[in-house]
Length: 223
Length: 223
DNA sequence: CGGAATCCTCTTCGATACTG
DNA sequence: CAGTATCGAAGAGGATTCCG
Image (cartoon, rainbow over all chains, first blue to last red; front, top):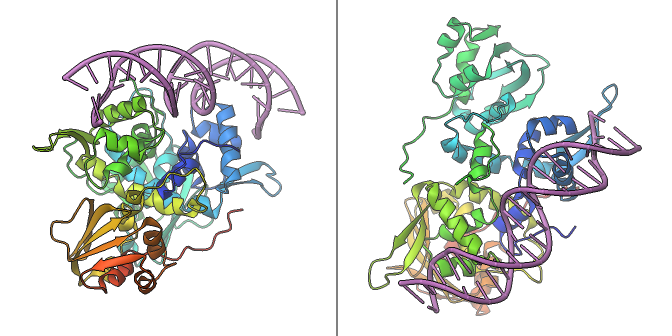
């Protein structure tokens, strides 16, 4: 052990002792949509370095945030997943993401991008009141990557992979998906221009956007 | 400049580019209760090293989170304070603190402690519904350090220093204050044993605790 | 004395190469 | 695929010195 610590009797300092190191919260982000293999994590965290990833996984396993599991046959591969304690980091991750959205623009030349980074965030702007009477499962295929969101009883659950029983399947690319969430592109427009395709109820995309779209950014005086 | 970046087009990664470095969020914590001088910050961040503090302050000033100000006479000293953008980190700081509270115990031998670290957190567990009809200003003196909380219209504002017009003044030590917040010590008990003293309405301490006490910790299975 | 800049040592990071 | 080993580069953290 002998991890570095701030040695402060303070809840924030304790949290940062555990998840304050470089890459750690990004690693948690990768796991929020479900279990991942070592290789998937390396791909989702460009430039992390394989030794650091191994270090972080060991450390997070040690404090009970991450669990190593072997998938049942036929997969049989080793995966890492969040424990209950790890999942409880989600509100903090969402708050940080909401704050960091102010710095999202511009998109720099060397920036890596991944559909899952945007899909995982949709619950951060979920509007329960807009989904109160809804019961629907959306499968999203963004740049070919499958995700799904299940709306039920005013709650939303999201995960990577195909849905078992989707009511509707939306196929689109990441730029269009971001455009829809930021309301720069209307569902009608996206469908009309062939930037999105819906299998099932064509109005479902409209509902999806109403539930998950980002609120208008407030004005800042950052100086 | 040339700060280190994750180079990911992702709101969380952008946030961590800005506030993910060591000490940064603790520095923000120090400023959440109001402006502080360089020396105060050094005292509140044991072992930070004076060069790192200067680096961090410059960095945070550069991105518009912190502002350097000179207090009006007669003080005339230079202080650092949060900008609007900096204050918007409060929800994320509170979420991290709520999560980190699971790791608060035990209190280790070498741990530094400061009353402000606990006072600043009381709004993280503020119960607006319990304060709906209340309009009251508490001055707390914890281990001799003055703070105050102003309740009005279901909202709470907190700050360091003496209140201009306190309805009540509570004098206590940090252990008792923590005991009251964690409900290990009842207000009656604290007053009866002389661990807390109230100038003004003796029932005010009871109301303070009802508004700000921590919820009972949920059970965990961290393994 | 408060507010830093400099110097030096130690740890951590990150890239690549290598192994079961 | 899932890691371990290695090594130069960058960052952390004390101590000391400098400046107003």
